[in-house]
Structure formats: C-alpha cells, structure tokens
Amino acid sequence: MQYINYRESWQRGTADFPLEYHHISPTHPQYVMALHWHVEFEIIRIIKGSFHLFIDEQEFNVKENSSIIIPAGALHAGTPDNCTYECVVFDMNMLMNKNDSCCKLIRQIIDHEVEPIYVYPKTYNDIHQAVWSLFDAVSSRKKGYQLAVLGALYQTTGLIFSKNYYNPVPENPPRNHRRIVQLKTALEFIESSFHMQLSLKEMADSVHMSPKYFCRFFQEMTHRTPVDYLNYYRIERACYQLLTTDQSITEVAYNSGFNDLSYFIKTFKKYKGITPKQYLKS
Image (cartoon, rainbow, N blue to C red; front, side, top):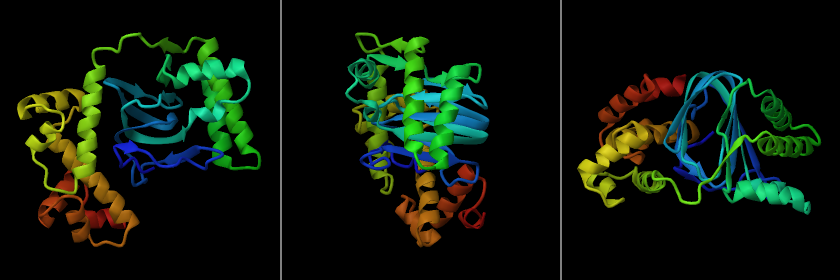
C-alpha cells in the first residue's frame, strides 16, 4: 500500500464502488504506514503481530485480532511489529441511500458529530465478527462480494451506535486541534518539497514558527526531529521508486533529495538496515 503522499487524494476503487483493499505483510514495500491523512474512512484489521498506531496525538499498541477505525481527516501513522494487517479505505457516502433513518445516523459520522472509538480489541466480539466478514468478502472478490461488503459496513456502523462505541465531538475544538492543523501544514510542505534541498528554517517558516520552537513542536507531535522525519520520508520515497521504476540507484538518490550517493546509501541503511542494492535483491 503506497502511503507515500502525506495527503492521499486519488480515486478509491471505482466511481460506483469507492472502496480500496490492501493486504500488507513484512515484505510489502510500504510495510510501515507513514504519517498521512485522507478524506475517506479506513478500517484496519490486525491479522498477526502488533501494530503501534499514532492518531491525532494519541498512541495505541494494537494487538493481533484487533480492529481499528480511522475517521476521515484523522492524521495517522503505524509501525508494525512482525505484523500482517489489512486495510479498506472507503467513501462513507457509499452507505447513503433513500432510507432516511439510516442516512441520519451515517450523516452524524460523516459530519463528525460523533467519532467512533479508534481501537477494538478482539474482546469486542461483535465488531470483530462484522469486520472479519468485511475483509473476508472484499479479499475474496467473489461474485456479489460488494453486497456482502456493504452489509458488513452497515452492521459495523449499526454496532457503533447501538453499543455506544463512539464519543460525541465537543462543540468547541480541543486545544490540540490547532497543533494538528499546523502539523498537517508542515507535513504537506515536506511532502511537496522533499526532492529539493530543504533547510530547517524553510520547514519552520511553512508554519510561521522559529526553528527552535518548530523543532520542539515537531518532536512533541511525531517523536522525530524535523530533519530525521525528512530523511525518513525521503527513504520511503526512494524505496517506492526502486521497486516501481527502472531508475538506477543514483537516479533515485537524486530524485529523493540527496545530492551525495554515499550519504544516501548510509541514510538508507540507517532506516532500512540494508543497502539499496540489498533492498532490491531482497
């Protein structure tokens, strides 16, 4: 799954069935979920191992057989640990139909009047069954799987309301809302400029902060320094280019913002544990 872009904005699935499915194992080129957000909702199931989830300044260590619901617009990332997981990313509007009683409830989620609980351990047996039915249907691609997928999404949404698996959204945005917006702005700047030479001051200027304050702010929000995150993001981009293009390692290095091949190899090994050449072979 390519979680390269800080904000994902492409068409999910097809126009008449806007849902995308991904199966991710440790050998997947984008195994680690980089910090990003999108306008669609996302459901994740953890099949094996554990998954460290970051979502809007909250952190969860999600265990095997658990489910995750990511609301639209939520800033999130994930670090898997010997983990196999699956995701569906979908437009919640696909559940809107002429049944007004259903639409009113679904609209509350779309409009963020309520926010579903993020993490559902396997002890949430009702959600577990609905989410597993959803993934089994979408991964099978059997004839009529779309109906089963919609049924599972309706069932999951119904459980959220009937079992109160949600938190009402406060009328006034929480104090951290502005910080999240600022972080999104900084990430957008990094995502659009990573291939160029970037200074700390330029990153700080993107959110009108001093470099010193920006470093403290960014590390509080992401647990990485701005320069560390920039290099991490560049290596993630490089991995995708290495596996999906015919460019040489040198070309990928320069296209990813590195002007020195030896420094690129050293940085690549720091984040991936192997050299770019070894990465291609593995």
